[in-house]
Length: 165
Image (cartoon, one colour):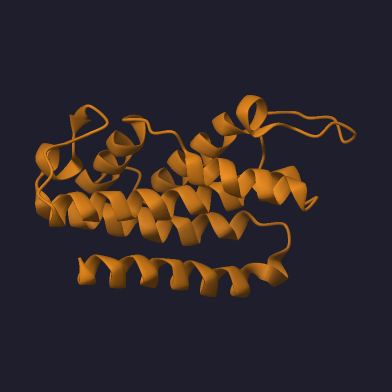
């Protein structure tokens, strides 16, 4: 079960801006750390942390969390869904930077420029698979199969779009 840093009383509606972004960010990083062996953190894990640390507005996370809260889902599920959406988006950015041979994103070197294209491809794959992993923290476990299929459709759409480009 997901344990949030942010403690919001039941009767208060949390705001994504103030209350949840830190929890979303932490969940994304924790998902990446969970896949690493204790003694050997791969370059892909380091690169994924690097990429997430380079910032971004977290628009997809904000939209997902705001929508989940508006639907009266539990706060922890709002964080899970937001983290999954943001991880998918960031996976697509890392892969796109490889395809487009971009050197910089958000004022920092891209993963491909900093770690090489091979590590960048692995990093994008890792971020994508982490989006599936965070869904395991969803309180409504019966909805996980539906969400896994939705993540697949979103990833597929991004992949097909990149192929057309």
